Image (cartoon, rainbow, N blue to C red; front, side, top):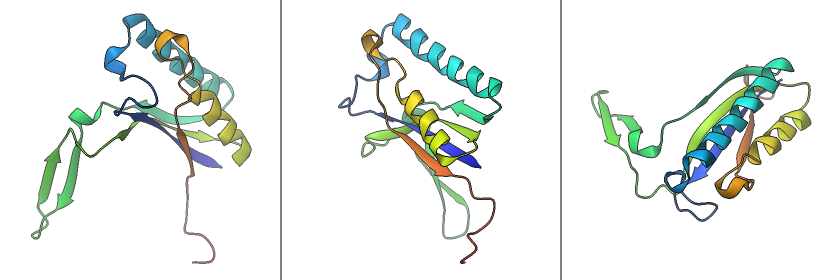
Length: 133
């Protein structure tokens, strides 16, 4: 079954300092860890897709206006404390394996090499509506 793993970061700095305060070596260690995670997922046949995302300052919120034309709100969004930083889609044999992968991703190194223990949301990917619908 496929699962989407969503990596959340906090701009409030309550969980860990903003990435703008990390040293280049700390950023390289973090990115290297993510590369190793991706390579292992590929080697294990569990990789489907994944990407890191730009920060909220480069994001946009789009809604349809009354006439259907796009109404765009540019970032950064002052009310946003957490933002989506990246995602993976994995294809695993069990939900427990998806949770195990998410827990490992959560240990990505941050400042001083300490594990960030950031929240990783695990969502089953639905290929069709549930049978009871």
